[in-house]
Image (cartoon, rainbow, N blue to C red; front, side):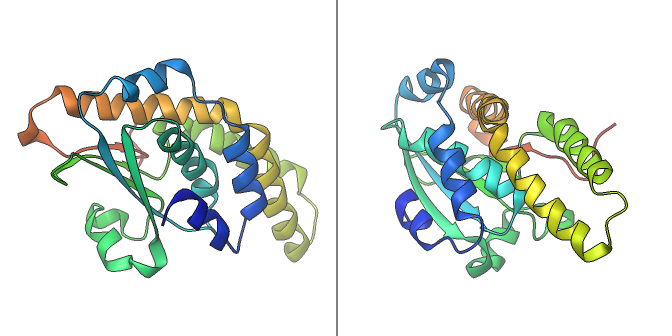
Amino acid sequence: MTTQQYIDQIKVNKDPFVAIYETVQIPADSLSLFDGLSEPLNLAVFTADWCGDAMSTTPVILKLADSTPNISVQVFNRDDELELSNSLLPENRAGTVPIFVVMDQDMNQVARFIETANTLVPDIDAMDAAIDQETAGMDEAEARQAKRGRRTSYRVERAQAWGEVILKEFGGLVAEALAGSPGDRPLEGGTKWPPED
C-alpha cells in the first residue's frame, strides 16, 4: 500500500497516527541525506495499527519517505505477512513490529530498522513509569484503559521530539550502510533485544 492507502484502512489508532504524521516536520539534515542520494531507495514497511511503537515510528518514517523523491515506499500489514516479516528479524525477535527494510534499486537489502529508535527506549520507559504512577490505585480494568489512552496521548504530544530522534537514528543507519561494503549489508538498527547494557 501507499501511505494514504495504509492510513485509509487503519482500524485502531487512526487519529493518533494521522496526528503524528501531520505534526512531524522533517528536519533539514534528515531530508538532505535522502535528497542527496545518487540513486533512489526502496522502503518496505511492515507495520500493525494496534502497536504503540508502530503508532510512533511508522508515521514519522512514512512522512520522511513522502517528503523526498528518493524513497519509494510500500506498506504491508504485518499480520498479513507474518512469515515474511519474521524472516527479516533475528530469531529472538519474532513478532516484533514495525520493521523497515531499506533496499537499493536492485532490491538488495541495505538496512533493517526494527521497532523504533534504540535511543528512545529510556523515554518510553519513563513514559510507562509515569503512567504507572498516575494509574496507581485504579482497579485493573480501569487502569488498563487509562494506561492505553495516556500512552497514546503521550506519544502524540511528543511527536516532533520523538520523531527527530527516530529520523536521526534511521538516517544514520542508512547512511552507514550506504557508506560501507555491500558485503556487510543489511545493517540492522532500532531497538535491541535483549537490551544491551
